[in-house]
Image (tube, rainbow, N blue to C red; front, side, top):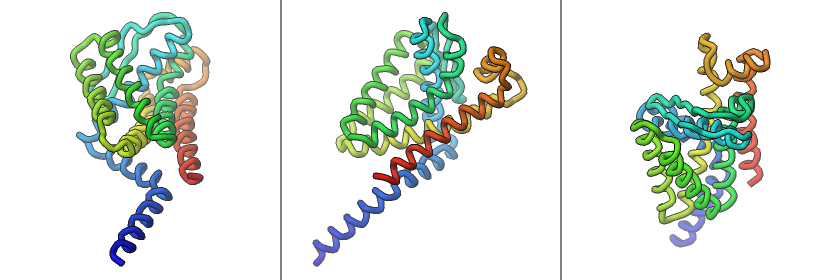
Amino acid sequence: MSFFSQNNSAHVSSSFWKKYHFFILLIAAIVIKQLPLVSIPFNWLESYFHEISHGIAAILTGGSVLRIQLFANGAGLCTTQGGSIFVISFAGYAGATLWGWGIYKLASAHQRAAQIFSAIVFILLIFSIIFWGRDLLTWFILAVLAIIFLLTIKLQKVHYLQRFMQLFGLLILLNSLSSPSYLLDGRHLGDGAALASMTFIPEIVWVLIWFSLALLALYSLYKTARKS
């Protein structure tokens, strides 16, 4: 009787998690974002994916990356040479959204996929330290992020890695939702201002586009979670 009760309890718990895991992880991500010290590494993570997206866009359009800088407050800077300025400028916020969405999707697809992707991000961070970091603060931040991903790879139970990766994806997406609004500070600096000067489309339009992309990405994950 006790054995049956335990089995039934485990089944109910598993069913509850399967049905509501997206909302549980989303609430956890929202709470983490409100915690001043705990949220810092995750702000760095979104900033890194933002800057590396600029870098990848530069390389894909025939340019090169000269330097990546990350700052303690979650800001960052990617200095590039050559390539398409339009694509590079657009790719930062859009790329961070894509990274967040992709991390969640891959982690949800298969435990092995989560493990492989975590290893790829770790290697990318090490590559960034060696070739694109130029100052102590950036090296420190990249090293902290690399250690986080190394620890997740080392998790004994791979399904825990899946949960962590899903949480990382949602945290990146939540930052992608909020960070474009920082451009609306009246200073006309940053990616939105650069795109506005190139296209004569107001900066707020670009901010709304990036916000909408992040919102659509979140909705897409929600729809997928409902079907699973």
